Image (tube, rainbow, N blue to C red; front, side, top):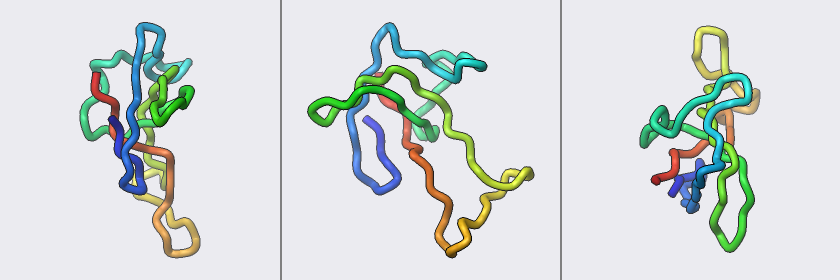
Length: 86
């Protein structure tokens, strides 16, 4: 289960074909911990996402890692969520 930025939750299932990391930087499921911000790619059906790829979400911002302003005073947004449980 993941918690989305709006506070709602969604079930994510992983399978032996789910890929972790990016195409250029492969990772393993063990490299994802509860609380990590992730982006999930997959197919949604009946409120469940069948994950095809899960990657760590990187904070968007300035080179020093501090978040950048979105220009309207609101914090930057992303499609990040906590990782799924196995």
